[in-house]
View 1: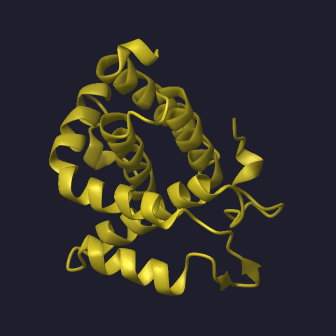
View 2: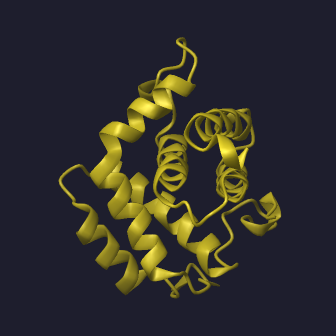
Length: 165
């Protein structure tokens, strides 16, 4: 189980170390955020950029831990390919007053990555995926967003993978 401290430095910035899949998830959320901000980019370009310039590199004086590059690429490419379906699944787990478009871009990236993992990575227990993405949410948000992510991913897991829950 991971905790928010696994993802943040003392000054609250996202921590760049950790286990290979954990780092891959965090990097995937960042890559998905970048894709949303730059719709002209495609997933393959962003995956190559991250592999070349970010994963395992030093950024702003912090050494990035090794990420699982295949897992990172699977998440980013998978979300990009299946985003319409993932957004529909996520939307069913949100309350009517808070549609997906109203959420912060980083929170959307977290939910999309978590939903993709719940749908496509049966080798990862649902509770592990949820825990990992909740910790990532804590790295970026101090308000109610982590609780929202928890509720949405939990609802999705109960619908998509009831045997795991």
